[in-house]
Image 1 (cartoon, rainbow, N blue to C red):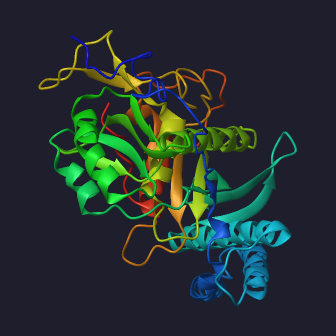
Image 2: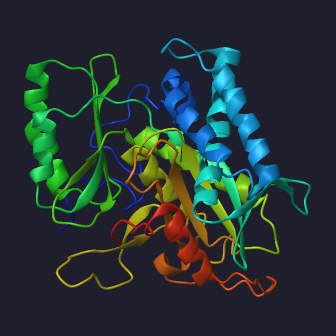
Length: 381
């Protein structure tokens, strides 16, 4: 007998609500990290500038370009901490990506690369970095990491759900409500978290039809217990769509004669869990239940990826690697992570029209491990 929550296509995100869809669903978009407190960037800017000065000899032309970008960022840093609006917000976004690129350039120099910046590609579009390390070359395309909407911190009652012995990720968003109502909702929400299928969603509205609570089962994760991600289902959908658009834009800038890396950067110590989940879903596809295969040993249901991923099937076969870079990551923390298409998907890419590359996929893997740390392990599928 199917679980009692199913009222739409199994495993499709946003496919079903436990209550009628009434009122406006809040879908606060993922925004650029640059809109948040850039006055705190000053120590990072100074550290990056000092590091670049020490590498002037190895890639003089590229270092001069990066230093100029750092100086523009430093000169434009605000004194206050509040968010900017209009043109000031746009300038902060530009300053943020300049700082990310400068910090990444420094990181590349630190692992022994020589750099060229703003390399013109065959379509007239520019590649952010052409990095050489020994006999190997990698084209790197840097995009701003969209940040998840700000969310309240989970309290003890919500954190108690993470004791549920069910290894799935759940997008959970709760807005202010009375303690009495929250206590009344807790048993129903817990039952949903324990029994609902991947892709199913429960929403609760107030008397005016405004959403006050939403929970969506996203998919399996490593481990034994439930994991909460502080974001609403609609917000997560918007974030995944935005990552897909940025991936497409980066793909249009690929250099055909080199392996290419798409890298999402932000001026933070580590991106939010919701941002990393949205990026992985955009790359690999959203998680779904699969009824055309046998489940793994010890599991009742098989899981896989939908066909909406940037890397699905033979889609974008020239793209084999993508990752994230946290410009403000403190030492000795690794500053990023990366996904390896061929290691994660069932059907490795076979781009028969691609020219032979002097830099092999194994060379790229070794390089990315030095640059960002170990490869990302995808959520359990």
